Amino acid sequence: MKKMTFGSGETNSVQIFSKERVHVDYLVTLPEEIGSPSQYSTLIALFSFAEEGDTITLEINNGGGYLNTALQICNAMADCKAHITAVLNTEGHSAASLIFLNANSCGVGKYASMLAHEGGTGMMGKPSDVRRQMQHYDKMGERIIRDTYEGFLTTEEIDRVLDGLELFLDDKEIIRRLDVRDEYFKALMEAENIIDNKETQEVEND
Image 1 (cartoon, rainbow, N blue to C red):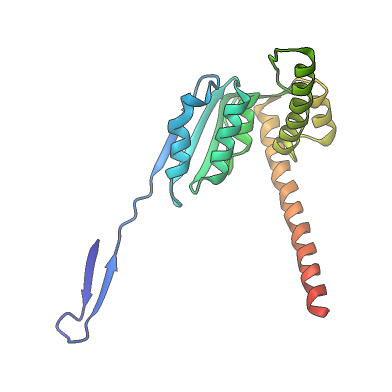
Image 2 (image 1 turned 90 degrees about the vertical axis):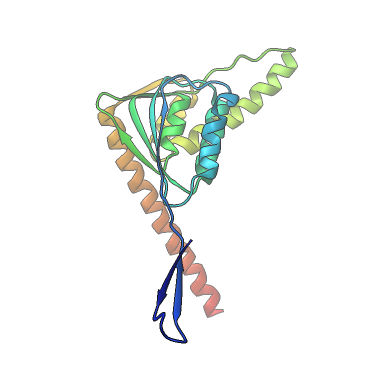
C-alpha cells in the first residue's frame, strides 16, 4: 500500500492511498489427449483464481479424450474472471474442440484442423442398465453438441453429427465458421434486446 500526500504542509491535507494491481498473462499448453480430471486440478485452480484484467492463452494441439474432463474445464472457463483466448494449433479434435469453442476469443493456426463427432462410449453392465445409460448419454450428448456447435455448424450438420457423421474442418473453414458464429450470436443478441425493450415498453404503458 502506497501513501501519497498533497498539501502536506496544510492542516487539511488530502491523503490519497493507492494499491498496485499486477495483471498476469498466462500461457497454458494442452499438447496431449485429455485425460482424467485429476490431471487438470492445476488448470481448474488457475481458472478459479485468475482475476479480471488477467489473460489466459490456451494453446491447443490435442486429439480429444475424456468428455467429462473437457466439460469440467469448460465450466471452469465459464466462471473465470480473466479473458481466455484459445489458439487451435494445430489439432483440436473431439473433446478438445469443446474447450476451443468455449473460450472468450479464438485463434487458428495455419494448417489447423478440427473434428466434430458424436463421441464414443464403453458402457458395460446388464442390458437393462446399458439401455438406461444409453438413453441418458444420448440426451446429454445431443444437448452438449447442440450447445457447443450452435452457430458454428448448420442445424443440418449438427443433425448429421448426431447421426454419426465425423466432420473434419481445416483452418480456413474454421476461421470462416468462427466469423459466421460471431454474426449469428450478434444477431441473436440484438433480437433479444428488441424483445426485452418491447416488453419493457408494454409494462410501462400498462
